[in-house]
Length: 563
Image (cartoon, rainbow, N blue to C red; front, side):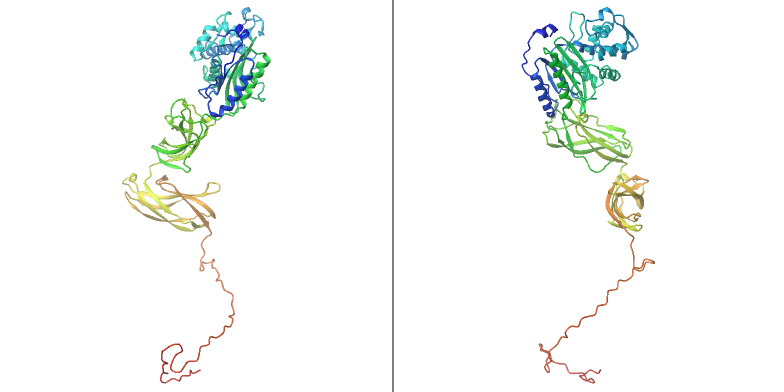
């Protein structure tokens, strides 16, 4: 155990930095910067830097070194007070009286006999580090009770002094554990955690962790000072998420310790950390039709998109979860357990089977995939990618049907639709009256511009055949996408298909009343004279170039034509 006197007189030799396992390769730069700060600091330093959503710290140095806490012990006093308030044993309006024994030579701001409400005493103890209020609370609550509460909630190596002959002792890891539970709203209760966070955010001593942060950054923290000791511990709410920062220093001048802690806060705040794992999902790009109440299996290629390899088991394991929401964004189903992912090096892919529990209610649902770490912590809030796709839950289809749609339709006129069908076993023995339900969709806006139905006919059990039906094109012009399916009583009976169509003006015919198209008359062309063909004079009895005889002139006629 390190006492105050020992801290003042001993000369520590820093043997090396012992960082905790980085949450991801993306923290390498953060680790490098913190290593440099620790290496150049002239005194001793115990650091614990963590993301409260991760099971391992982002960085640690001498994190298990017992250090005199100075005023950081007041965090433990606050926890015990809030436990009593939560249990109804104390109330914020209860009176705390400051006695002579509570007054210290330095850091006490009230006179003996001053009465404060419990709320005011806690506020003074935390926000201005009032020793009189803190010792009055220490007497009222009892140090044994404070230590027992710390042990019970899982905070080890944090000891509040039992008498004035002892020191308050804690390791950076213990203080970091307390603050991690607070950041996760798990310290005593969510409501108590919120009250403690709000009080720590009202801290008025801001010359360390917040000193080099942009104005307006929220920091919930508590400082500590004794001769030769300078501490600050809290939660910095950085753009990339909350960061627990515990910096406890010894054997350094105050000016050096203040600058060191301020630099630590700045480095942690500005670090843009890669999530522990990231992925790319090749999800279906079109709506996937599934039966209501079924277990639908969908295969999704998953690629390790991070810089760290995944393990199939152990602390480095990465798993996948899913959730399903309805059209009103209500959660209707989640993965019963995380889906195991294989060991994958960065850039490598694997096909992962996802079994979805489809609701009994027909409708469109959105499925979102995401990653969790080995402890089940969701990684999306740390920056890991998610991916979504749509499923359409329908009552079991009763027919396989394919419809041939002309690619060119005429506005307001009928075209022939040819639907070839086969009844499925789910159709049963009863006949079914079917219609073709359709939507005309603007491809630029993806909005429906017209809808309707076209009667097809009756489906008989086990039948295979063809329906012929007229389809009257809507009164629009242009290129569209026609989505259609077969329905019975407005319930989908087949899969949905689509076709690209162009709707042009109505057909016209030459003999249409009022729509006669005048004939196109070609301009008259005067033919140019061409040379006459000249034939050689025939030789008597023989046709030139042949061996055929010349036929005699028939009787009753002359050889010269009569004009």
